[in-house]
Amino acid sequence: FASDVLGKAALFRNRSVECVNQQFSTWVYGSSEVLEQVQEKVHEASAMSKGEHWDFTATFLEWAPFAITESLSAKAPLDLPVTLLCSQHGPMIVLQESTDRLCKLLLDSHLAYIPESKMWWEVENPDDVMEELLALMRSVIFVM
Image 1 (tube, helix red, strand yellow):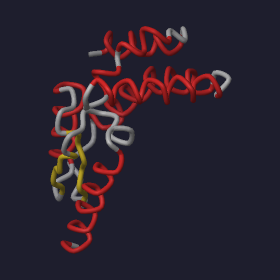
Image 2 (cartoon, rainbow, N blue to C red):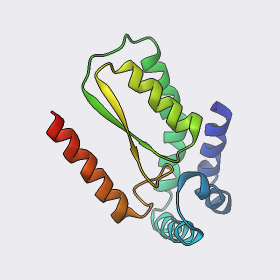
Image 3 (cartoon, rainbow, N blue to C red):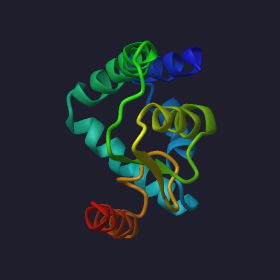
Image 4 (cartoon, rainbow, N blue to C red):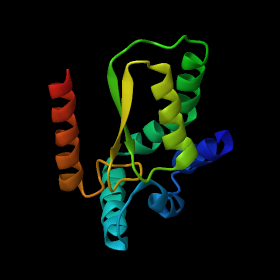
């Protein structure tokens, strides 16, 4: 896991556009058309960012997974009402299993899945995903 995450961070740190583009099938759920559209949008945004996108993503990947794991590893379970969202088709270890472990640390929590999504749900058919998220939010609000 660690070497995979750090390897992805290095792609962003080195601004390896082509290598990053090859990773989109890991992060984005959808047809080849959807993947191509996302690649174009990210390529355009990256070109305009003057490096901020690349630096932020690399730093996030180098820091966040390890800091989060370390900060939660010694904590007692919390009695906190929360709904955790997880992409339905997300990578098993990086996303689904880690979200399930977090759910077990939050005693009053439950896990909901974002359908038709891998990991980068905000760019995967955004209108459909947003409808699903709004429905999930309404159900959470009514339960409380």
